[in-house]
Length: 174
Length: 229
Image 1 (tube, each protein chain N blue to C red):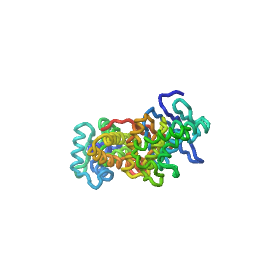
Image 2: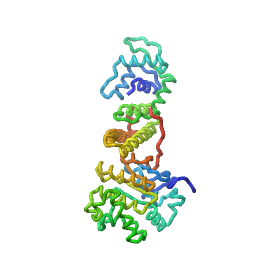
Image 3: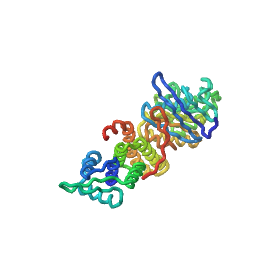
Image 4: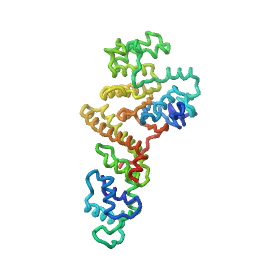
């Protein structure tokens, strides 16, 4: 999963946010048991600021290092929206990327259902290719194709279930 | 209405009592295409198949087959159309249990008044074609699920239908047997030039098709095209 794009996505909700709050939101929704180290939060925000995708405000008085609020720039927002609009190359073990995109899309009021529809289509395109390979290729290729097909099928089942749960999921992450 | 499609449904609505199964479903199937119709249980995909095949008459909307409007045909004409131009394979083969495998395959030809000798001469090659040459004299109770489904496939294709409708054709089969049936179905349809409408909730089965649509809440969603990151 892309930490920079996820942090950008969290900032795309609109309000300027401290690095500490970004880390908390990230850990709440995306960490999956692996909290983001503070150092990675600030180094990532530094790189995003250098690239013009976020802007840091003036340091606020107080203790500790986290005294700046960061806001997303138009360039950063465009990058997040472009990323959300892209399906992911269908391959096994995509769940964290799919999950992140759906949750961020819901947080930002974007078309999560449309994203899932597009991803389903991308998965099925890949499954068609693998099925044709299996029908026409040697047995070894068929076995490898089967491996890919079963994993893609698992993703698709997740996509179907998530599509059916979008309303409840939107309430949970809002 | 003249379109380049072999089969087309436009804004089809169908209710069962107070349950609205289809709410404006539209779909078009090209000649020779294998189209998968996907969707969760209760989404309306089987109802759509039944409307496309002229089994149900829509409450509203139009169904066209090769330039003929199907939904306004009389019951008799729709029955003739189904018998002559369409083939069907459902989840359970629905073979006639008193008949042998070969009898079942020949049945559509006999119903179409093809002379008996000719009907059986036309039906027999399908046994070998679908790997059933040892089972021609077996009744359905003596066939495995996969064998019975292959007989059902042969029966659906023996009269060279222009359109094959299948509803969860591998739903009662294990993975490997289902795969065999799908391979035979696709190969036979391609060889015969038969257009196929394949209803399934199973993505691995849908992957045998050229294209899929998704039915959700009684509407058919076309596949979105999208960039891939």
